[in-house]
Length: 219
Image 1 (cartoon, rainbow, N blue to C red):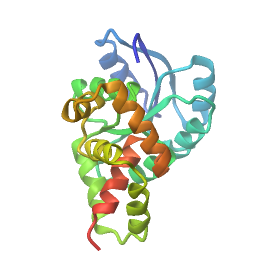
Image 2 (cartoon, rainbow, N blue to C red):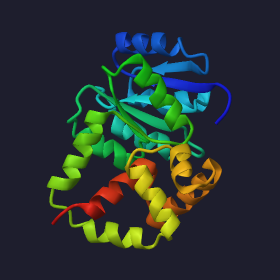
Image 3 (cartoon, rainbow, N blue to C red):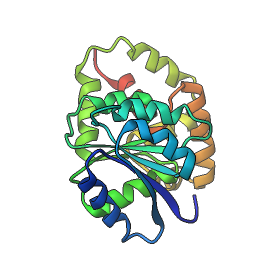
Image 4 (cartoon, rainbow, N blue to C red):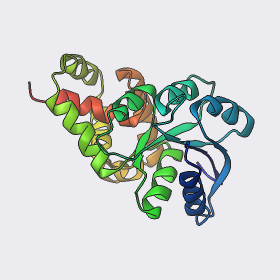
């Protein structure tokens, strides 16, 4: 997307919200349009302020970030959700992925990583902190997963080019980087990626990356 990215901050800790607001104030293309202190407030804030990205804490005392992510993604034309967690091994990471979060970020990420992650998901990409990514992949590889055959069958519905793009997404490449590797424009990659998501039933590019990992996992 072009122009200013509108951001909604959701966290029960006002100090965390203040820290994120200060970090985002250094990026001229990012604007914090509202804050929420619990999951119950998120839908109303989204409807009132129309953010492009919701930075969502996963652990909140009343309505947690997973349920709030489900609420947001069920809305018409929903904003993108970037989930935030304090622990790379937080079990709610996988639940938030299933709920439709486009990326995951650790709260102790550097300011540069936080800004880059918000920009990435606003552009339609995914964002995973390296340690969170390692945890997700480890869970897929080590947990018994009866869905492996289903994952392989879903990927078999893709064309050769769509499969190559899915592999690029799994590797963490942006649309621009995938396009450079395949001699395609970023817009063409986006079109093929959208079709791949439809064919596989993956909710977003992060879910597609997990699908590729599930298909690869050893029995």
